[in-house]
Figure 1 (cartoon, rainbow, N blue to C red):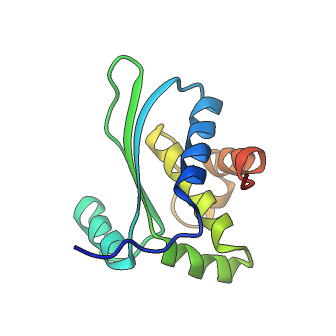
Figure 2 (cartoon, rainbow, N blue to C red):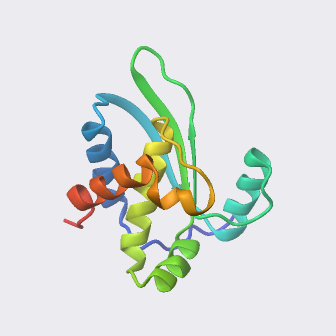
Figure 3 (spheres, rainbow, N blue to C red):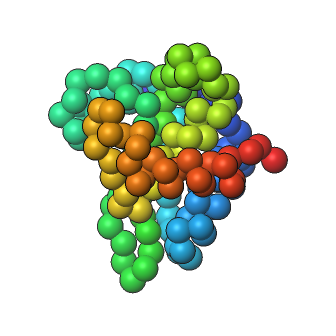
Length: 138
């Protein structure tokens, strides 16, 4: 059993943000699991489920819905987010919020291309709109 990684985003804040995104997307009923994991765990999950043997920042899996119920798992790596925040000149908490919104959108079926097209995709634009609206800590 590994220690739970530190995250700059309290559990209540993660729940509030996920709920706000779901509501904004018209989802009334959802069951999401949100886990903050270490670098080794996110790499293992990425290798096992996507065949990519490398760290990533967030993984999200929509598990299908039954009669309008959205079900999914989101795995976020705060250590990776902190490195990205330093590279992008943002705060670690802001980057974790971005990843959480990104994960919720993936669970809802949004997708984006890899590479340069990622940050100009419709999904990225929606993510940034939702962050601007709901991404401030309370």
